[in-house]
Length: 85
Figure (cartoon, rainbow, N blue to C red):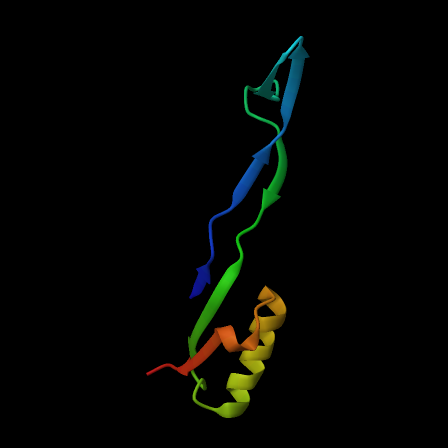
């Protein structure tokens, strides 16, 4: 199980038109009518819980913790590995 800090965030491109003392911002639209995505921020992982066979073994726990930490860029103190019953 993975706990996320927030969902995916999308930033859309805007077009600014200025005239005199006023300015107006509108989203840049593509031909199909959808907004142009400028940036997509992926969610941040807060913590991970792993339940597996061998999870009670210290060596297996260490290997899984190292693997999950490397894959998801999560510190080892936010990873919990437990034995499956």
